[in-house]
Image (cartoon, rainbow, N blue to C red; front, side, top):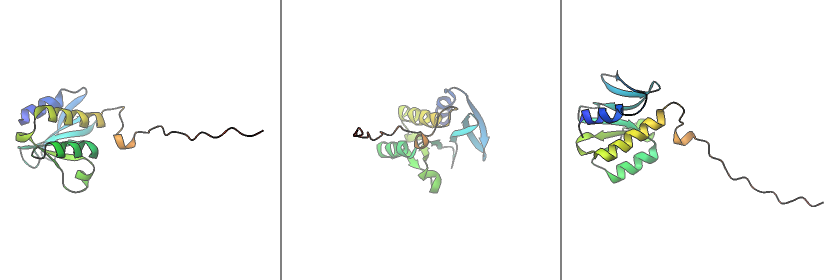
Length: 125
């Protein structure tokens, strides 16, 4: 994968705009950054995915995906070594990052899940 390929994928999703942040390009939806290019250098990109998605990608593609350092990495920020990133895996990662930030969506860890309610036995009369 190349930086231009990363950029094409990121810009292919609805509502995305490219801006600059800390001296390198970033990609935003609804004003929120979901991916960046060029950090720590031009060989890398970053995607903001869930820790669960990060775990899968790091396990399946250890040369391409690495958790970012510190708390950012623990919360899902994932470095992408572009040269080693298969285009299909990178597209899936960028789409997952976009979905987490797109207006109207909620991060996976804050989505409310319906919990089963315990059924009460009928009252004796």
